[in-house]
Each structure stands twice: as structure tokens, then as C-alpha cells.
Length: 507
Ligand code: UN1
Image (cartoon, rainbow, N blue to C red; front, side):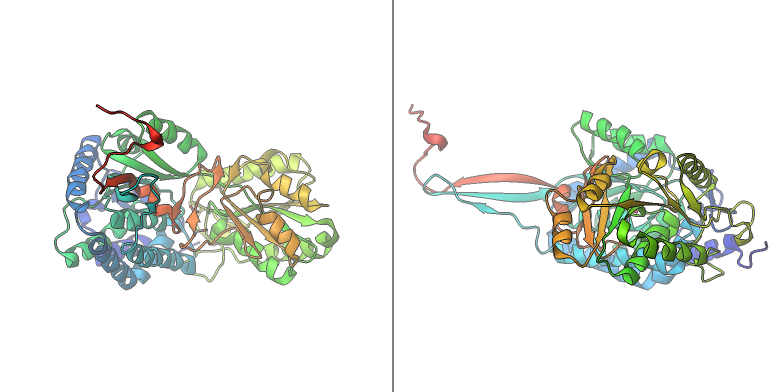
């Protein structure tokens, strides 16, 4: 099929408008593609390892100056960045659609998430609270102070090409830390655009040190420079568990910090008392939204046997009716998969599920939605006799495995019986069930919700998960503490020198 919008010139128009220099994307050595049609949109210039090292050194120089700037003043830069993002929302949102394939409201939603975290970080810049602690010694005061940590490396994934960087960057900047960002090779253009928008804020701010925010583009060798460089104090990495397994130990080896946000295999439990109309909508968005390519996507659903027959056929109808298509030219709710490998991974999982007795609705390629180089699929709902095979793994595509359960304890056990521990939901109007699910014996995930889906978290909460999800927390709550170093200070304002624990040492 012939597409109406020329993505190459549309991409060029947006990059140009946002002020990304042509030298960064016109004739570089790395081709950039849009999953909307599969066509090439730009040729990005990659960063050499030597350049990356120089940039990290520059970031470290920036750190020395930025850490001395009062935090509320650092917050002013983030406030200006939020303003620039508001002004650029339409363009950046559209570029997210072009580069990651998200439908327009999700592309814009991603930019809104950036604006929200800026607002959060601005408020935080006047807080960053420490504690005072009761000292056992007379005439002494104990306190805890938070100081800037150092250069923060951010490694981000294609599916949230700009928001996840902004969670890290807005917080890091108010905490006094410069950022060096390695975006996914699949989404370098949105990264260049976000950086250009940030530079507008920098210009208005005036006297920030050079090198506060930098982008390095390339494959894993560039990521390794970031991970191994002694002047990078923390790496916040989002991606597969496989990636985290390499990055985590490398950082640990040099005692650098890591915030890992890795895979998810998120589940929902639909209880007998659930409001089924609402549950249907929550499940539909959670499982099919973003074409199943969120780390928070709903992938497993446990439905109580007493409502299975009334609920699941309705869900199947929703799957049959959902619109799949070009996000720029149609009002479809489901856009493309990121690439061929994602499509093949999805087909493989579906075949494996079938072999285990899975009953599949959907999952086929939608060839009329785009040219051969684009991968549109109907989201798949797979009724499974039990939780086995591909159900236990994260497949980054829209497959929802549906299973029956009899009692809640069993459902919670099944929910927790996977390696990842990111997000989870219960749908119930029964208070006991909801509270059990949220209790110590309930969901083992970093995110546990009641009567909403697993995805679409607000920035105000700490975001991340347990087990193979990596244990890191980003975004709201007190996640900022991960970007600062803590000092415990004891001050003696007396004329004596009493030692703690009653120790005497009289000379
Ligand atoms: C991700 O998929 O890596 O909760 C992040 C959500 C979004 C963030 C997802 N706010 O779905």
C-alpha cells in the first residue's frame, strides 16, 4: 500500500524545527528507520569511543561546577526545560510516533510524562531533605546530608525513547549530576530532538557549565564505554534482563551504582466481584496499548472460573474489533511493532503456546496496514490450560495469556511464579481481596494496582520492580536518593569528647 505522508521529509522538518543540526542526522553512518512504514528516515552520526570518553570527561568537569550551584537554582534549569517541552510537545510527540510507532495520543502522552517529571523535579529542588538524628552524646548533633553523586549514565530503550531519559535527567540535574545518555539504536532521532530542546532551556538559563547533558549514539560498544568509565558514578539502564545481566556485574565490579529497569511479565487477576466493564477497558489498554511494547504491558491474566465464561468472550470480541493501522494516517489504537525481529519473536511464542494447548485469537500480520517493510499485527489473546512455556517469559509484543483460577491464594502464587517482578493488578470490589493482594503475602512486584491496569504509571511514584526486573527505582517518591550520596555528620558543640558506646581512651 502507498503511504501518503513522506516520512523522510516529515522527520527532517521536525528535526530542523526543533534545532537539531543537520550534521547529526543527514549523512551519518547509522541508518534510522520508522516502524510505521519500515522506511529509512535519516542517517545518524555515531559517536566514537574516544569521543564518548572525552564527553564523559567533560561531564565530570561540569559536575565539579554544577554540584556547587544551589539546588533550587538547578531546579530553575529543569523548570525552563519543562517550558520548552510544553512548547515542543506536538513536534516531539509526532517524532515519537514516527520513530517508535506509538499512536499519537501515546506519543503526546510520552512528552507529557517528561513535562510532569520536570514539574516534580522542580519542586524536589527545594527539598532534597536530610534528617537530624538523636545523638547519644551530650552536646552533639547528628544529621544526614545529601550531596551530588557524579556523572550519571542513562541507557534507554526504544519503547519509551525520551520519557525514561527525562525521568533520570530531570532528577539527576536537580540532584547536581550531569547526564550522558545512550539512547536505543532504534530511536536516536527522538534523543537528538530531546537534547536540542534541552539546549534551548540551557541557553535561557545562561550560566550552566558545558557538558551537563550529552548524547552518545551507537551500538553496545558505546554503552560499554559508559558502563566501564571510572568517572561515571551511576548508570541507569532500561532494557532487557539480558542487557541488565551484563551491565549490572560490570558496574558492581568497579563499585559503581546501578539502577536497573529490566523485563516485566506483568499479570492481572480478575476476581468474581470485579466491575467487568471497567476491567475490560483496563485489560484492553494494558495488553494491547503501545502494541504490547511497554515493560509494564499486561501479559498474563488470571480470571476466576465463576466469571470466565461471561468475561473472556467479551475480551475476545474486543481483540477482534480493535483497530490496527498506521498511527499517522488512521485513528487505529494499535500501531506497528518496532521491527521484524519483534514480529518473529511474537510468532514463535504463539506457536509454542499452541503446542501447549493454547487457543489463539489474533496474532496474524496485518499486511494492508503498511508496506512489506512494516510489521503490523493483530494483538493475540491466548487461552492457556496452564501457566507454562512462553507464558513464563516476556515476549515484547501484544500477546495476552488468559488462564482460569479457583482461589485467590493460588492466583497470587501463579502471578508471582515468574522471574520478573515489575507490575501487577487486581480487579475486585472486595476489600479483603484487594488488601491481601497488596499485603506482604500478596503481589511481589514493585507496582501493585487495584482496579487499574499494569501500565501507565504516574511519575509521582517510584517506578521499578523486583527480582529479574533489576530492583532499581526511578522517577518519583524518594527515587532521587539513588542519584545522590549520603553523608552522616556528627557535630560536637560541647567542650568534652565523650566517645560513643561508652568507650574510654584517656591519654
Ligand atoms: C517502560 O515501558 O519502560 O507505566 C516504561 C508505564 C509508563 C512507563 C513505562 N509510565 O507504562
